[in-house]
Image (cartoon, rainbow, N blue to C red):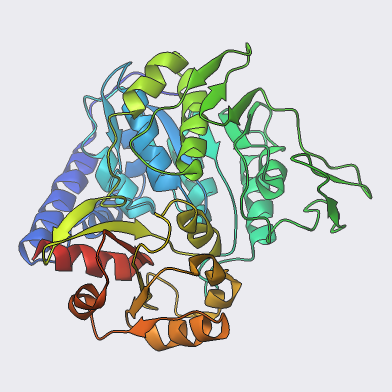
Length: 412
């Protein structure tokens, strides 16, 4: 838990100053925000800096395969009803980026921190959070990420005995398994659209039964816990049975799910659901996601989809046919170099849409679309895709670095 704020030691102050200087040099050189390099420099000078910076803060950690950046943004907005918040809002979610974010939080009361799945247990040990929000686990970056069941087991081991209140999605069996080692869990029925990574029991390996929204393992008895919060249509139902309307500017069921988890997490900090949800309405975009921009006299909506579960959710929120759709896929280091995940995505959901294909791996995607029986046009770049698209707002869906490419292009 957060303690009283104490002045940083001379070593810690030096580390923070050096980190800020490194970040400033990185920004001046056009290398991005500088948060990662700044954090790396600071941690090199003081390896315990993350714990020192978090000492006076009430910290909530947010982790998942999909939705953690948006949930972090929604929850940070909700907690501002109770005091100043520091957050890694741009998504630098490994220890270096988190350290850079907390270095700017000396006057804050709360810290809302997005954490990469692989680093959750370690960051939790360092910052001693008051709460941890866990949304979902699914396949991602197949060339380097741990298999989802292995990751759930690591979370389970790392969170065993934690003092934190764990806010967990009861509809995801992997999240339930990971969270169930924790003494205090608030279960949220937040839904699970993508189920292909959760058909086997994480406890015994048996086949999970899914007769309805419930799930259970007939072999060992592991089952969906009874939730105390629930997403119900356009409302979140609290433990007292009161249904609070969710009114967001962000589209789609997945974001209503993120809002439901955020409301439950905010309640752990004493923020009333009505207040929390009203504040979430202020969020229009998250690090460029969902932005509608004007480019070459056309409107483009920018959407991020990094893995099969993310693409499935994104398909559910785009405008229907004949809305043109630009698909862009890269396979750079930050994306993962293995594109075999494309075969797990049900692209037939795009039937009827004019499809324009761009990106470093446009030919990989073209083969996948051809097998799916879809009509599409491979284009050299975004400019050609926009020129070739029929009238109407364009939905532009891209994985991580392809999304950053799109953002830079439309800003020029």
